[in-house]
Image (cartoon, rainbow, N blue to C red):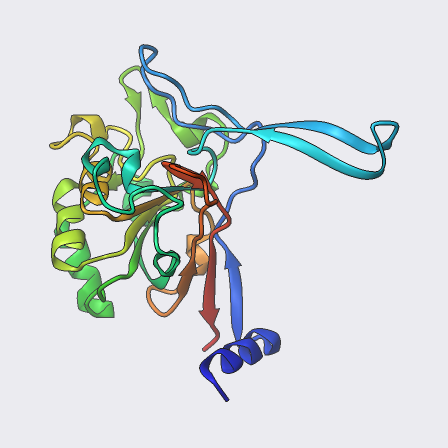
Length: 258
């Protein structure tokens, strides 16, 4: 059998499972809150157009509106100032083979449970590699914190000094980009950076380093606790928005049963 025929048979037979890593888009899902002097991210909105009625007797449909960065979403290089001149930096320009790749899941759930402001460091990455092997080039690295299990105000976890949520240190992102050549980095929080990432150097290091290097971000992921540390394949294709800086999307992982 060909490779694709083997994969199709494994999917049909249940040897390969499809895990949904996506939150449901609804008006109540939290979005990032910036200081009031900045423009704000729009929540998801859905308006009924017809419901098998006088507005459309045989069909039901909706108009929807939202930010490119609402819900489970993809960040393209052009999203950040460091990536504004990166070739093929908008979502409609990214080669489609970049949307599929192997997955490495670094489990930081215990650390995040103890410290809302936990930062992933190179030491954590290297400790993970000592157990599971070196992160391969062009892989997606996902930071599991179980933050996606939070609901409502606890998800953003806003304090008087802004949000508090875990994320990577600048040194960890530089290691992953420069030394491991990752394809992208994903989190369960509202952004790829820690809630207090504005105070790191550079500010918001995941955004600045990833996008400046032409790499990608995924945030508001769910169900990372259902993935193995290695061996899964990620499918994360954003909408093909002309000049788009990002997009809500359905993130799927293919997991082979042992």
